Length: 460
Ligand SMILES: [Zn+2]
Ligand SMILES: [Zn+2]
Image 1 (cartoon, helix red, strand yellow):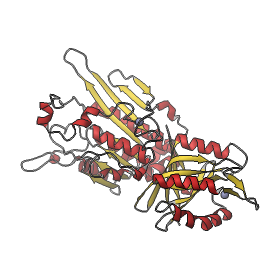
Image 2: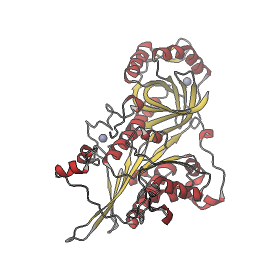
Image 3: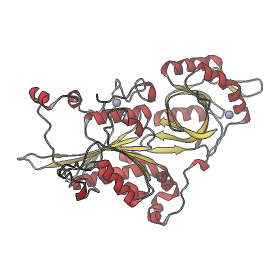
């Protein structure tokens, strides 16, 4: 068995599971149906649906006094799993706290029953999870014969809660004087989480490039960077880390923005693991590099990049933060400068529901400039952009990440879903994300938690 299974919950589902399991003083049970995907050794299970077993009806006690799910309940759940391409996980609770494990009776029943279940649910995984009040262990049986235990479980809501089978699963942190002062705030627990985190940044332009240095200095050492763009004279003033030698010269194109960001990160931490991908996140399945990220910053403006990332966040439960600045400047009016920092949290209202993916721009993808002109849409004019505005929004975004991912005892609800900043007056509005009942991305009956069983929208 290897510790390479990750189990991800939207907060709403985890809350109902917890309530069902622990609201009485007896053992309770149910089934989780999970989207799933495999990247390298790691298998990620994203909980799409919870089926509670009714005590005494679906979950009964054997003559020897052991709890068991009734065959009819198992059969219905298995059929639902198989028809949707989902993994099947039977769950129950033990009255344990920070450490939980299967009993010998639990394991014997898995060995007796799961070869048959695996056969019935072929080619999908089956298995079990046991819950303590602050811990989870799994026993996942893969179609390829592997058997996996829990690496980590996450509950994704306003904050991100990390769970393990026992405190030994928590990422360790070996003291390093370089982060001594921030340890006073983050503690070893928070610093360990940062040190182990794999962070994605989509868009390394004016805003995204400002995120790299502080993240590297915080102690993040694994990055995935995506941006097809190159540096040129018109963006040089805003791309953090760029140098004159990166600019285009005769017969030579400018450097890729991702390579500039990688160089900057490695100059701070030569041991960092940086995947610099000069590609468009919405083309050719490149979004898959984000699937094992623990957190993603979405700093690309295009509607199609937002569409793809919004789908990834909700299908695969990758928590994201969308960031942007907008300068409204009219000759007759004083300028207004807005900044936005928006959480994209699985199961909460998404960018699509909230009108943040420009449908006209999506419809225009693939059209030539001549075609756009002939349709009198006009070609998108350059909008004003200033490095200092980007810096302020980047700072807010980084603090949001720190509080959400690696801090304990902070009330994440104080940050809301969306922070809307007026950068000239310094005022801030907190906005709750709206959620449309018929949204194809963030509703239970939609792509939510579907993982590989539904295609991610990309541009042609
Ligand atoms: Zn048990
Ligand atoms: Zn939505």
